[in-house]
Amino acid sequence: MSSLDAFAAGKLAALDARHQRRTLVPTARLSGPWLEREGKRFISFSCNDYLNFSTDPRVKAAAIRAVEQHGTGAGGSRLITGNHPLIEELERRLASLKGTEAACVFGSGYLANVGIIPTLAGRDSLVLVDELAHNCINAGAQMAQGAVLRFAHNDLGDLERLLREHRGHHAHVLVVTDGVFSMDGDLAPLEAMGALCAEHDAWLMADDAHGIGVLGGGRGSAHVGAKMARVPLQMGTLSKAIGSYGAYLCASQPVIDLMKTRARTLVYSTGLPPAAIGAALEALNIIESEPDYCALPVEKARRFTRALNLAPAESPVVPVILGPETRALEAQRLLAEAGFLVAAIRPPTVPAGTSRLRFAFSAGHEDADIDRVAALLRERVL
Ligand SMILES: *Cc1c(COP(=O)(O)O)cnc(C)c1O
Image (cartoon, rainbow, N blue to C red; front, side, top):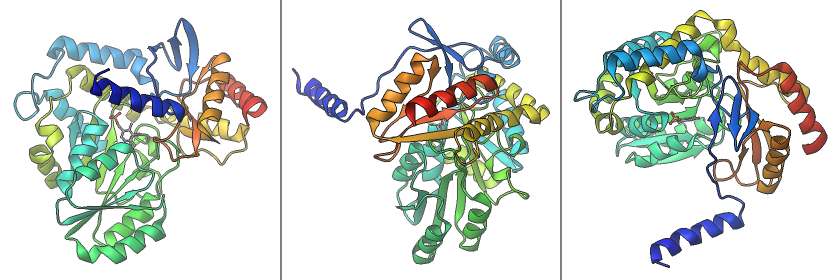
């Protein structure tokens, strides 16, 4: 065996021994929450397509129209020839939804975070990151040239301690958190965090991947309280509730202008294909006109948490924490036998010893199916 293949095989064997190896399974997504694997149909509680827009006839038609008018690919970086007219329309619509001066669309959420954070945090900066923040926030912080520290999850006291201790030693401080935590479904205390950051002249960025479309009347997690949280950097993705692909930063005009000239993942990567933009624009049309529909995923999640006597869901994401990897994998297998697809999430995506089933609820889930899956969990897993 070559040293290269021996390296890969050794890594895989170590992951297997820890029950942490992952493999891809061909999966055909059907309509609503349904999908098909290995010839079997399942109800999925694992898709982030909270509003089922990725198979919505109106959204699909908008994507097809965009392809017919503008073709399949952007043809280049946005700064060369890839700045499709529909992208600018989408940026205006996102800024208006989020209540900011401007917006910048990126290729994906991962690319956005890896582009935005190093653009704002140089050698003279400190980045403070919630310990449970998404992997791509940590990747962005690693790519920034300054210092990086973690604060305890959603712990304003710990964040304040770090700000008091370190603010004076850095020209700038960027604080980054998920708005909705992707594996736990809880919300960051953005109103209080925004006030704390403003007090210390730190810049707050919230990643609203799981908030846009489904919280705050569709406007996202910075908009759930009585007044809008002070979050000058509102980032999010178009690949979850929006049902498409791509991501955005909504912020002031100078910040957005800086991104468009300096963020490496915007400058050196091809613009989004027209179909993705056309779909996202139609999704925003529906979000803005159907607030009751947008509220459904959280209502469905609350039906589930009531049935299991868990704390009421704050978002469409609900974890059922089981501990060891093997226990989560076994629960996943048992639910799959009953026709429910729920992904077991294991380290390093979540901390060691907190392997879990991660439930994601969508507008299209039937109440009866939620009740059935909850009963099965109560009787056979918990
Ligand atoms: C999914 C996710 C991302 C990545 O977004 P993509 O568009 O899928 O690359 C970023 N941040 C959070 C919190 C996420 O859950």
